[in-house]
Image (cartoon, rainbow, N blue to C red; front, side):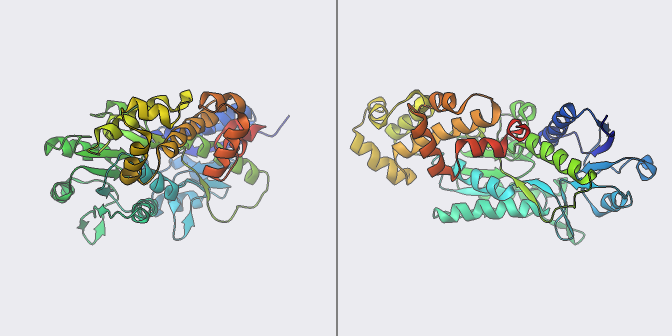
Length: 388
C-alpha cells in the first residue's frame, strides 16, 4: 500500500482559469488514489481556514494573492507549489506563459485586418505587465503602436482590480481610441464590453474585444459572446500536482518558473471582423477560415473570391503582409493544435483532418512553423502524454 498523501488545495473557484487548474489537479488525483484532497470553495483574496495552521497534511497547492495570505501559508512547514505568487520575492512555480499570450493576442487582432490597437487591464500585478509588454512588442514588430490604459492611482497605489473610481478614466480612454480598433483586455473584459454598450460603440464592428480568460460560460453569456485565450489551465493544475508529488517524496523545490504555453484564441463574435475595405479579400479570408482543412489551395480561394490568383496574392500581401497560402497553413495548424491538445486521435488522423494529404508533409510544416514536432507539441500541452 502506498502512503496516503494529504493535499490541501487553496485555489479560488470564480474564474474559468482557476476551475481549469482544479480540473487538472482532480485528473491527477483520479490517477493517484493515494492522494486525499482537502478543498473549499473560496475567492482569490480570501484567507486560508484557521485550522490550516495545525493541519497535519503533506502538501499544498495554492494561488497566493497577497503577502498576508502568503505568510500564513509559510507558517505551515510542508511542501507547497505556488501558482501565482509575488514575483519579486516568491515567484510562482508553475504559471501560464503570459508573454506567449500577449503575442498570441496581437497576432489574432492583426489577423482581423485591424490597424489601431489598445490594451486594457484594471490592475497592475506582475503577470499583467509581462502580458501587456509582449502584446505591444508584437504589434511594434509589425509596425503598429498601441494605446495603453493606465489605471488611476488611489491613495498612492494602483488598485489591484477594477474599481468604480475608474469609470471616468476608462470612458475617456475608450473614446480616444481611433476606430475600428482591436482591444486586448488582460482582465475585466466584460466591463469593457459594458462600457462600449454605454458609449454606443458597436462590438465588433467598431471595436473588437479580446479577453484573456477563456471561461466558456462567462464568454458565451457576454454580449456579444467574447473571444478569449485558452491558457490550458488544466495542464497547469496537472503539472502542479506532478511537481508537488515529487516534492512530497523529498525532491528539492525547483528554481524559477515552469511556463505553460497557452493553447489558442477561442474566437467568438466579439472579434468576428475583417477590418479591410477590399470586399474580394474579405470573401477570401472567410472562405479560408471555413474550408482550409478541406484541402483547398490558393486557386480555390481565388475562384471563391471572384478574383485572379495574382491579384489576390498582391492585395492579400499589401493588407496582411502575408500570402493566401500562408493563411491557409495558419488555419490548418491552429486546427491541428486543438486536436493534438484536446483529443487522443493519432497524429496521422489529425494531419488528415487538418487538410494535409500526407503525414510527412504535415510534420514538416508543423515543425517549420512551430519549432517543434506534432508529438512533442502534444507532450507539452496534453496531460495524456505526461502519463505515458
